[in-house]
Image 1 (cartoon, helix red, strand yellow):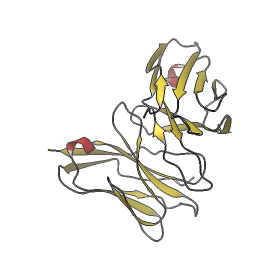
Image 2 (image 1 turned 180 degrees about the vertical axis):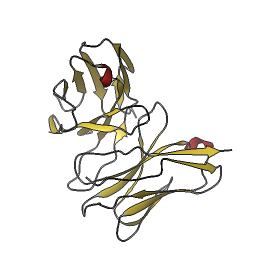
Image 3 (image 1 turned 120 degrees about the vertical axis):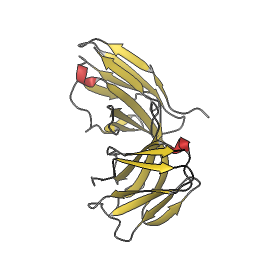
Length: 118
Length: 108
């Protein structure tokens, strides 16, 4: 079956511009995560959605970053006034559900969007 | 959230068993331990998850001692295609906190 897809695969933009990154999770997965990964580092948590609502957005670095999931499936990560430090691979993951305290359903990751801010 | 410590890198040869140990001294009662694998230019891929004792699936085993302050991922008979970064995660809430991971290099 289809996995998690992300578009675009690469995005080059200029400092100060606005960008949108899209994530299509696996059909039926209610939980969706966004991460940011810099070269040589592990993925850094940004935000988690359970359905349409952001259950935890504490990883968003500042108010230039915003994410939505209006219908509980596709999600868009929006970055305003991009800075060179925003350059990274942005990963999206989905899981069937989040189960209670402690137990964690397997996360399926997309291939990522490589964002380069010039 | 419990912090994890893993070796930065490991080398092995094809056909050998590889054990990667992760320390998580501050693990909480409701935390689970999960391992992911990541190849270059790909997202991480789930390998195995456990709470205590031993868990085994078709690709790996996970050993967790009684105090749960560490865990060991065991990869039997590695091949060149197992060259990747392996992440140990400990979490009991919404967040999934990745460390820097262990870079495993399998040689012929």
